[in-house]
Length: 189
Ligand SMILES: [Zn+2]
Image 1 (tube, helix red, strand yellow):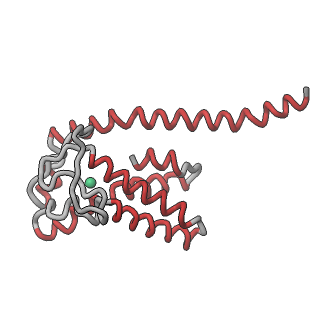
Image 2: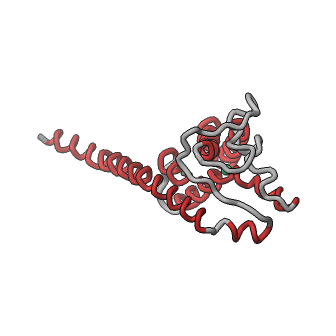
Image 3: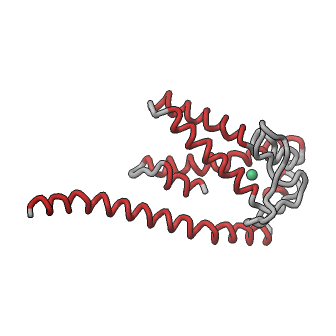
């Protein structure tokens, strides 16, 4: 999703492209860093789907931080970049909303701070990710067969999205490169 967002919102060329793709992928996965404090207590799920990490309010906060960074360091428009990074972060929350969840609290507190209620789609698109244990056992457990199958489903859903974006970008690129030439040819006639 991070890659798709980068292609759609902030496409770049050259060496900067890979750095931006990595940054978008990082921000798109940022909410799941809420596993980390749970590692310290021996229960990685303890703070998972917390209202600060998986919510509209948390995403706006992330957007302001990254928008502020790009505005101060690179002179980019603060509002535009804040909106972009808030959207990328919130896309994670939306995808979790559409994911099956087998542990309480089910779903995500999507609209915090306006509501603390955890909500989940009645029609999940993605399979649940099975998680158990702590420490190394937790990380190793993520590679179980069910989770690999869940990852495969996610790939199958996103490949057409990425293909469509690539096709649209190609059309824009073709239009840009044929447009002025056509005008010159018409001018010569
Ligand atoms: Zn998540």
